[in-house]
Image (cartoon, rainbow, N blue to C red; front, side, top):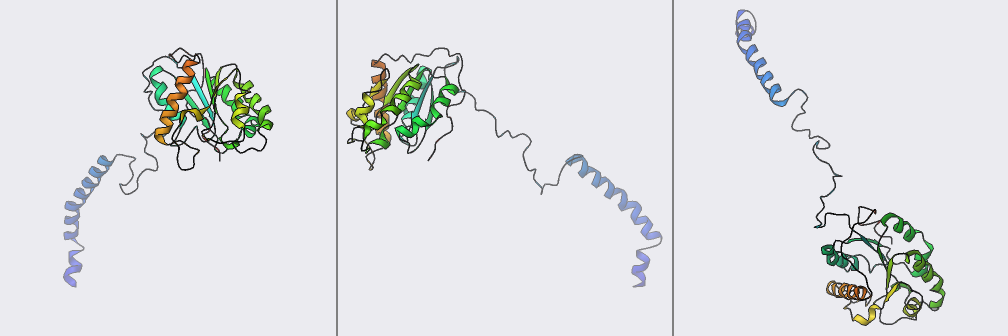
Length: 249
């Protein structure tokens, strides 16, 4: 015990401090220089990496350098989803420099769609050159389709200043909504989708992936035959994004 006490005090302790103290200080200074003056311990990661920008826009991949004209496609669930007519149209029109903007409202019928200001807002946002309306699927069982005529006419009036088309549902049997639409869509192009024989899923309402591609090809053929020219052309203004509001249930 006495030897340990002498080893921790007196001249031996002073000699040890003269040797170890400077070495400890040098080691601490070296570690501090490596970490930097404001570093945090490695076990405490920063909450947000300083070089990460989560909102950085994606680079444009379009082969067309000039602003593109916009085709706006709106309507029910046949517009979006894995069976999306919009997606197929976008793939096919990209090479022609056309921006395809879409808005999907799942489960909507003609009358509900006409009462909402959604379409009017989209027309202001996108200023489209072409408009494709896809409605009627959720109205195929209406007991009195004629009651939807004022709504049909209101929708047509909203889009008729542009080249417009109404793509009807794929449901083979209805109570008359397709006839009501066809009789009141002028000056828009009416496309009766039932005549194409599009393959559908088990529900008989939505197209398969292959069916959707086939459907899009026939829709585009019909529109070209009606005089729609999709050659790229400069556009004065319009929204820079391709989707407005996603979908509603």
